[in-house]
Length: 271
Image (cartoon, rainbow, N blue to C red; front, side, top):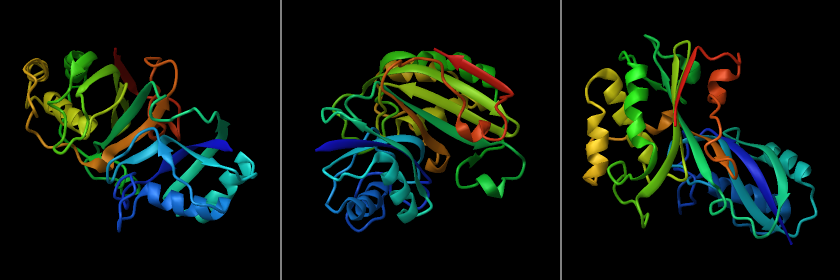
Protein backbone atom coordinates (compact mmCIF):
# COMPACT_ATOMS: atom_id res chain seq x y z
CA UNK A 1 0.00 0.00 0.00
CA UNK A 2 1.33 3.45 -0.95
CA UNK A 3 0.14 7.01 -0.52
CA UNK A 4 0.69 9.40 -3.43
CA UNK A 5 0.53 13.19 -3.20
CA UNK A 6 -0.27 15.57 -6.06
CA UNK A 7 0.34 19.29 -6.51
CA UNK A 8 -2.78 20.47 -8.27
CA UNK A 9 -3.87 23.58 -10.19
CA UNK A 10 -7.37 24.26 -11.43
CA UNK A 11 -9.68 26.87 -12.87
CA UNK A 12 -12.63 26.70 -10.49
CA UNK A 13 -15.03 28.79 -12.60
CA UNK A 14 -17.17 25.89 -13.79
CA UNK A 15 -16.95 23.77 -10.63
CA UNK A 16 -19.17 23.81 -7.55
CA UNK A 17 -16.09 23.94 -5.33
CA UNK A 18 -13.59 21.27 -4.34
CA UNK A 19 -15.69 18.88 -2.27
CA UNK A 20 -17.65 16.10 -3.96
CA UNK A 21 -21.41 16.72 -4.06
CA UNK A 22 -24.08 14.48 -5.56
CA UNK A 23 -25.28 15.69 -8.94
CA UNK A 24 -22.81 18.61 -9.11
CA UNK A 25 -19.52 19.01 -10.94
CA UNK A 26 -16.69 19.38 -8.41
CA UNK A 27 -12.91 19.16 -8.63
CA UNK A 28 -12.72 16.26 -6.18
CA UNK A 29 -15.48 14.38 -8.00
CA UNK A 30 -13.84 14.70 -11.42
CA UNK A 31 -10.36 13.89 -10.14
CA UNK A 32 -11.55 10.81 -8.23
CA UNK A 33 -13.46 9.52 -11.26
CA UNK A 34 -10.48 9.84 -13.61
CA UNK A 35 -7.93 8.62 -11.07
CA UNK A 36 -10.04 5.54 -10.29
CA UNK A 37 -9.97 4.58 -13.97
CA UNK A 38 -6.21 5.09 -14.18
CA UNK A 39 -5.29 2.95 -11.14
CA UNK A 40 -8.05 0.37 -11.62
CA UNK A 41 -9.87 0.75 -8.29
CA UNK A 42 -12.08 3.24 -6.48
CA UNK A 43 -10.08 5.95 -4.72
CA UNK A 44 -10.86 8.56 -2.09
CA UNK A 45 -8.90 11.81 -2.25
CA UNK A 46 -7.93 14.04 0.69
CA UNK A 47 -7.15 17.73 0.15
CA UNK A 48 -5.24 20.28 2.20
CA UNK A 49 -7.95 22.91 1.70
CA UNK A 50 -11.57 22.77 0.51
CA UNK A 51 -11.99 25.64 -1.92
CA UNK A 52 -15.42 27.20 -2.51
CA UNK A 53 -17.42 27.26 -5.73
CA UNK A 54 -15.65 29.39 -8.34
CA UNK A 55 -12.37 29.54 -6.42
CA UNK A 56 -9.16 28.58 -8.24
CA UNK A 57 -5.95 26.88 -7.14
CA UNK A 58 -2.31 27.08 -8.09
CA UNK A 59 -0.95 25.03 -5.18
CA UNK A 60 -3.59 22.60 -3.89
CA UNK A 61 -2.10 19.46 -2.29
CA UNK A 62 -4.06 16.20 -2.37
CA UNK A 63 -3.32 12.55 -1.53
CA UNK A 64 -4.78 9.10 -2.19
CA UNK A 65 -3.89 5.54 -1.20
CA UNK A 66 -3.33 2.81 -3.80
CA UNK A 67 -1.71 -0.54 -4.47
CA UNK A 68 -1.07 0.38 -8.11
CA UNK A 69 2.55 0.05 -9.23
CA UNK A 70 2.51 3.03 -11.60
CA UNK A 71 5.27 5.52 -10.90
CA UNK A 72 4.35 8.97 -9.67
CA UNK A 73 5.57 10.43 -12.98
CA UNK A 74 3.45 8.01 -15.01
CA UNK A 75 0.39 8.95 -12.96
CA UNK A 76 0.91 12.62 -13.78
CA UNK A 77 1.08 11.91 -17.52
CA UNK A 78 -1.93 9.59 -17.45
CA UNK A 79 -4.09 12.00 -15.45
CA UNK A 80 -3.26 15.08 -17.50
CA UNK A 81 -4.20 13.20 -20.70
CA UNK A 82 -7.63 12.33 -19.28
CA UNK A 83 -8.62 15.26 -17.08
CA UNK A 84 -10.50 18.26 -18.42
CA UNK A 85 -8.30 21.26 -19.32
CA UNK A 86 -9.49 23.06 -16.18
CA UNK A 87 -7.51 20.68 -13.93
CA UNK A 88 -3.73 20.16 -14.15
CA UNK A 89 -1.58 17.83 -12.05
CA UNK A 90 1.71 19.72 -11.76
CA UNK A 91 3.74 17.02 -10.03
CA UNK A 92 3.43 14.01 -7.72
CA UNK A 93 5.47 12.23 -5.09
CA UNK A 94 5.13 9.39 -2.59
CA UNK A 95 4.45 10.24 1.06
CA UNK A 96 4.17 8.12 4.26
CA UNK A 97 0.80 6.48 4.91
CA UNK A 98 0.58 8.55 8.11
CA UNK A 99 0.68 11.82 6.16
CA UNK A 100 -2.57 13.83 6.12
CA UNK A 101 -2.54 16.92 3.86
CA UNK A 102 -5.20 18.73 5.88
CA UNK A 103 -4.00 17.91 9.39
CA UNK A 104 -0.27 18.21 8.65
CA UNK A 105 -0.45 21.53 6.79
CA UNK A 106 1.03 24.35 8.88
CA UNK A 107 -0.50 27.18 6.88
CA UNK A 108 -2.41 28.05 3.71
CA UNK A 109 -1.70 30.99 1.42
CA UNK A 110 -4.59 32.53 -0.52
CA UNK A 111 -4.27 35.33 -3.07
CA UNK A 112 -7.07 37.57 -4.27
CA UNK A 113 -6.48 39.14 -7.69
CA UNK A 114 -7.87 42.40 -9.04
CA UNK A 115 -7.71 43.90 -12.53
CA UNK A 116 -7.71 47.67 -11.97
CA UNK A 117 -7.51 48.72 -15.65
CA UNK A 118 -10.31 50.97 -16.96
CA UNK A 119 -11.56 48.11 -19.13
CA UNK A 120 -11.34 44.43 -18.08
CA UNK A 121 -8.91 42.18 -19.92
CA UNK A 122 -10.82 39.32 -21.53
CA UNK A 123 -7.86 36.94 -21.13
CA UNK A 124 -7.98 37.24 -17.34
CA UNK A 125 -11.70 37.91 -16.71
CA UNK A 126 -12.27 34.40 -15.28
CA UNK A 127 -9.49 34.81 -12.73
CA UNK A 128 -9.68 38.42 -11.50
CA UNK A 129 -12.24 40.82 -10.15
CA UNK A 130 -12.43 43.94 -12.31
CA UNK A 131 -12.15 46.77 -9.79
CA UNK A 132 -11.50 50.35 -10.88
CA UNK A 133 -11.87 52.28 -7.60
CA UNK A 134 -8.68 54.00 -6.48
CA UNK A 135 -6.99 52.14 -3.60
CA UNK A 136 -4.73 53.54 -0.91
CA UNK A 137 -2.40 50.54 -0.60
CA UNK A 138 -0.39 52.06 2.24
CA UNK A 139 -3.53 52.58 4.31
CA UNK A 140 -4.70 49.04 3.59
CA UNK A 141 -1.35 47.65 4.71
CA UNK A 142 -1.24 49.79 7.84
CA UNK A 143 -4.77 48.91 8.96
CA UNK A 144 -4.36 45.21 8.14
CA UNK A 145 -1.95 44.90 11.08
CA UNK A 146 -5.03 44.42 13.28
CA UNK A 147 -5.52 41.03 11.61
CA UNK A 148 -2.04 39.65 12.33
CA UNK A 149 -1.71 37.05 15.09
CA UNK A 150 -4.22 34.85 16.94
CA UNK A 151 -7.75 36.25 16.78
CA UNK A 152 -11.36 35.17 16.81
CA UNK A 153 -12.27 35.72 13.14
CA UNK A 154 -16.00 34.96 13.50
CA UNK A 155 -16.86 38.39 12.08
CA UNK A 156 -15.37 37.19 8.75
CA UNK A 157 -17.12 33.83 8.83
CA UNK A 158 -19.84 33.06 6.31
CA UNK A 159 -23.26 31.71 7.10
CA UNK A 160 -23.57 27.93 7.61
CA UNK A 161 -19.92 27.58 8.61
CA UNK A 162 -19.28 24.18 10.21
CA UNK A 163 -16.06 25.06 12.01
CA UNK A 164 -16.11 24.33 15.73
CA UNK A 165 -13.81 27.22 16.56
CA UNK A 166 -13.43 30.56 14.80
CA UNK A 167 -10.00 31.27 16.31
CA UNK A 168 -7.25 31.37 13.69
CA UNK A 169 -3.71 32.71 13.38
CA UNK A 170 -2.94 35.14 10.56
CA UNK A 171 0.79 35.03 9.87
CA UNK A 172 1.15 37.74 7.26
CA UNK A 173 -0.60 39.77 4.58
CA UNK A 174 0.98 41.10 1.40
CA UNK A 175 -0.16 43.68 -1.15
CA UNK A 176 1.36 43.28 -4.63
CA UNK A 177 1.00 45.35 -7.78
CA UNK A 178 2.13 44.55 -11.32
CA UNK A 179 0.88 46.99 -13.94
CA UNK A 180 -2.95 47.05 -13.73
CA UNK A 181 -3.07 43.90 -11.57
CA UNK A 182 -3.26 44.07 -7.79
CA UNK A 183 -3.19 41.14 -5.35
CA UNK A 184 -3.97 40.73 -1.67
CA UNK A 185 -2.14 37.68 -0.27
CA UNK A 186 -3.16 36.14 3.07
CA UNK A 187 -1.31 33.45 5.04
CA UNK A 188 -3.06 31.81 8.01
CA UNK A 189 -2.89 28.46 9.74
CA UNK A 190 -6.33 27.78 8.23
CA UNK A 191 -9.33 29.73 6.99
CA UNK A 192 -12.98 29.77 8.00
CA UNK A 193 -15.71 29.48 5.38
CA UNK A 194 -15.60 32.70 3.26
CA UNK A 195 -13.02 34.21 5.63
CA UNK A 196 -10.50 35.18 2.93
CA UNK A 197 -13.11 36.79 0.67
CA UNK A 198 -14.74 38.71 3.54
CA UNK A 199 -11.34 40.04 4.67
CA UNK A 200 -10.72 41.18 1.08
CA UNK A 201 -14.04 43.07 1.10
CA UNK A 202 -13.12 44.79 4.38
CA UNK A 203 -9.64 45.76 3.13
CA UNK A 204 -11.01 47.13 -0.14
CA UNK A 205 -13.46 49.30 1.81
CA UNK A 206 -10.52 50.66 3.81
CA UNK A 207 -8.53 51.22 0.61
CA UNK A 208 -11.32 53.29 -0.93
CA UNK A 209 -12.03 55.23 2.26
CA UNK A 210 -15.48 53.67 2.75
CA UNK A 211 -14.39 52.24 6.13
CA UNK A 212 -11.60 52.71 8.64
CA UNK A 213 -9.24 50.16 10.15
CA UNK A 214 -10.85 50.58 13.55
CA UNK A 215 -13.85 48.71 12.14
CA UNK A 216 -11.70 45.56 11.83
CA UNK A 217 -10.27 45.83 15.31
CA UNK A 218 -13.61 46.60 16.96
CA UNK A 219 -15.41 43.79 15.12
CA UNK A 220 -12.89 41.21 16.34
CA UNK A 221 -12.81 42.59 19.89
CA UNK A 222 -16.60 42.48 20.13
CA UNK A 223 -16.67 39.04 18.45
CA UNK A 224 -19.35 40.14 16.05
CA UNK A 225 -20.94 37.32 14.10
CA UNK A 226 -20.33 39.13 10.79
CA UNK A 227 -19.18 42.56 9.70
CA UNK A 228 -22.12 42.69 7.32
CA UNK A 229 -20.49 43.26 3.94
CA UNK A 230 -20.80 40.42 1.39
CA UNK A 231 -17.73 38.38 0.50
CA UNK A 232 -15.73 39.41 -2.55
CA UNK A 233 -16.67 37.36 -5.65
CA UNK A 234 -15.02 33.94 -5.72
CA UNK A 235 -13.52 34.34 -9.22
CA UNK A 236 -10.67 36.46 -7.84
CA UNK A 237 -9.59 34.00 -5.14
CA UNK A 238 -6.72 31.53 -5.56
CA UNK A 239 -5.30 28.89 -3.23
CA UNK A 240 -1.71 29.87 -3.92
CA UNK A 241 0.25 27.53 -1.65
CA UNK A 242 -0.04 25.00 1.17
CA UNK A 243 2.89 25.07 3.56
CA UNK A 244 3.93 22.05 5.60
CA UNK A 245 6.90 23.75 7.28
CA UNK A 246 8.28 27.23 7.61
CA UNK A 247 4.96 28.96 8.22
CA UNK A 248 5.49 32.70 8.22
CA UNK A 249 8.44 32.46 5.81
CA UNK A 250 8.53 35.17 3.10
CA UNK A 251 5.52 35.34 0.83
CA UNK A 252 6.01 35.16 -2.92
CA UNK A 253 3.89 37.22 -5.31
CA UNK A 254 1.16 35.19 -7.05
CA UNK A 255 2.45 33.27 -10.07
CA UNK A 256 -0.26 35.06 -12.07
CA UNK A 257 1.71 38.31 -11.68
CA UNK A 258 5.17 36.87 -12.31
CA UNK A 259 4.68 34.47 -15.25
CA UNK A 260 5.74 37.03 -17.84
CA UNK A 261 8.24 38.95 -15.70
CA UNK A 262 9.68 38.24 -12.28
CA UNK A 263 9.73 41.93 -11.38
CA UNK A 264 6.85 43.24 -9.24
CA UNK A 265 6.17 46.97 -9.33
CA UNK A 266 5.41 47.09 -5.60
CA UNK A 267 4.99 44.64 -2.73
CA UNK A 268 4.15 45.51 0.89
CA UNK A 269 4.27 42.72 3.48
CA UNK A 270 2.65 43.01 6.92
CA UNK A 271 3.59 40.42 9.56
